[in-house]
Every structure is written in C-alpha cells, then in structure tokens.
Image (cartoon, rainbow, N blue to C red; front, side, top):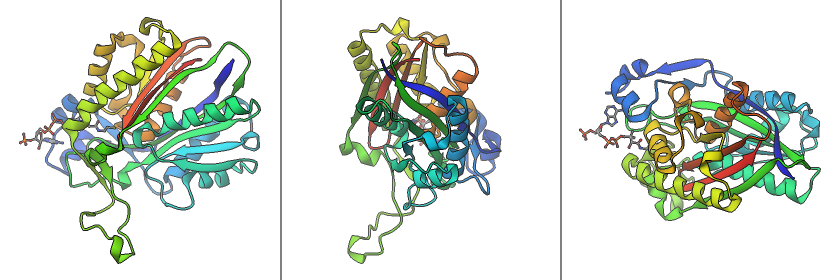
Amino acid sequence: MGTIVLGTGSCLPEKRLTNDDLEKMVDTNDEWIATRTGIKERRIAGKGEEAYILATRAAEKALAQAGISAQDIDIIVVATISSHMIMPSCACFVQKELGAANAFAYDINAACSGFLYAFDLADQYVKADHNKKVLVIGAETLSARVNWEDRNTCILFGDGAGAAVLAYSDSDRGIMASNLQSDGSLWNLLYMHGPQSTNKDLQDKNNHGSHILMEGREVFKYAVKAMEGSVRDVLERAAVDVKDIKLVIPHQANIRILNKLLERLQVDEEAVFINVQKYGNTSAASIPIALDEAFQAGKISKGDMVLFCSFGGGFTWGASLITW
Ligand SMILES: CC(C)(COP(=O)(O)OP(=O)(O)OC[C@H]1O[C@@H](n2cnc3c(N)ncnc32)[C@H](O)[C@@H]1OP(=O)(O)O)[C@@H](O)C(=O)NCCC(=O)NCCS
C-alpha cells in the first residue's frame, strides 16, 4: 500500500547544442567535455519554450499515460531554479496552461534535488489523504542561467522538463523509503544570485549577474559521498539489497560522478539508466526525464524496485526507493 506513479512524461527543446558548437563559443573541445563529464550534447530552449511550457508538455503526456484529466489533479508541485518569472510560480503557469482548475500550485527550490524533494512532498500528501492526486514536475531552462563565457559551467547544463502523476494504491506497490538532506553551510560551492536588490541597503557587490557559479572539484567530492549515504539509508530502512534493485535512476550530473557512486555501491552497469550524454545536467528535470525515457524504453515493469538519487546546490541531496 502506498504512493505509486500513475504516469510519466517529458519534453525537451528541439535545439541541440553539441560539444563542437561549444568549441566555437569558449576555449574547450569535445574530448575534454566528453571525458570529464560524459556529455556530448544538450538541448537549448528557443522561442516559446519557457520552463512552464516544457513543463506543461511533459505534464500533458503524464496525465494521458495516467488516464486522468487535468481537472483530476489536486496539487501541482514544480521543482525549478530557472522559471521565467519569480512570481507567479512556474507551477501557477502550468496550472493555467493545463486548465487544472481544482489544483493548488507552487514551486520548490532544492536545485538539482528538487524533483526528489517534490516527490517526497507528494508522497506525504497522498499518505495523508488517499484521494489526492499530485502532479510533480521538474522543469528547467538553465540556458538562461549560465554565463556563456564561463567554460567551467556553460558546458554542463541543459534545458528540459519531466513530470509524474502520483496517487494512492492499495496494492503492495509504492514508495518504500526516502531520504532528504541538506547542508546550507556549503552554499558557496554551487550557487546563483537572483536579480540585484532594488533596496540599496541590501545590494550585494558580489552579485555579478544571475548565473551559476561553481567550485567543480569540491562539488564532485561531496556529491559522491552524499548520494552514497542517502542511498545506503533508504536501502537499509527498506531492508533491500542493492542487487535487488531493477533500475537506478540517478540525477544526470556527470558520468564520472555516477561511475564513482555506482562503483562504491556495487551496482551493475545494466541496472543504471544514463542519458547525460544527450541532455547534460538538466537540474531538477533530469530524474523525471530519465524516468520517462526508462519507462518508455520498457526498462521498468510493475513490481520492479526503482531507486532515485540526487545531489545539487544548497547543498541538497537525497534518495528514494519505489516498488513500481
Ligand atoms: C566541472 C568538472 C568537469 C571539471 O573537471 P576537473 O577535472 O575538476 O577540472 P578542473 O576544474 O580542475 O580544471 C582542470 C583544467 O581544465 C580547465 N577547464 C575547465 N573547464 C574546461 C573546459 N570546458 N574545457 C577545457 N578545459 C577546461 C581548467 O581551467 C583547468 O585548467 P588548468 O589546469 O590550466 O588550471 C568536474 O570538477 C566536475 O564534474 N564537477 C562536478 C560538477 C557538477 O556536476 N555540478 C553539478 C552538480 S549538481
């Protein structure tokens, strides 16, 4: 008995930006990017592809797969750090686009861990009221939030959205355990300023623009350790052996982070879903996009145990285990 996923969907912008394209923009090359990150190309939003539009398209597919209408949704939670406006939330724009008149909607910010935070929120709503149906979305247009002259960061990120509809099932399926953590004292290793304050007293002379700044090496080190801890915690609490996991769907940050993590956890290569080569790091959107692709590819069936794990700015991190 628990919270299950009724349907998934994803939406990627049309435009591809390859490593070769990036070579013409900053001092980098395909070999450097591919060996250090595993990324070959990423998608970049064009006109009419704001985060809420990508989110809406992903949500429409998830609703269709779930066999329910937008009016059946009670809550919309969008995880994002790159909506086109600060207010209203991305989720309110999605509500408007979908015509989900019976829902309340809000965004959460947990950077790349946002989808897992939203997934856990949805689980709590559903556990508290078995009639609730929650639309959980990760949506990003990080192309609008990177400094395209900074080769340390602009090569890493991409745009996209993924969605899942969560609801109660009285079967023996559902979310088994989740672990969410954060450490705000490490905020300055990966961050993004907002717009400069209009209140002179609150103006920050270090605010050089609203784009991502990162200490890559430090992020790498913490990411592996932190995700390993969260995964071990959910496995232990659910009394599940890692060998029994059908598919691990990690946040698609970087192939080297993932390889290190999977080596430490002793997960077999074929039990991991990886698409970072096609989309780069799409932050909060990466897990739901990968989940949708894995499901569409027939890699997950009813009764399979699926494990998610993530790491991002904050720092925030976590893991979640579900019997599909
Ligand atoms: C970003 C990352 C790929 C950089 O790899 P790294 O091996 O740590 O590389 P460094 O930052 O130490 O830089 C090594 C050299 O490559 C250079 N370099 C940095 N970016 C480059 C690029 N895009 N192309 C070519 N050279 C680059 C650096 O300037 C440095 O040169 P130097 O030795 O002359 O000073 C790696 O640190 C990483 O994966 N970090 C995690 C990032 C992440 O996933 N963030 C999101 C988490 S949600």
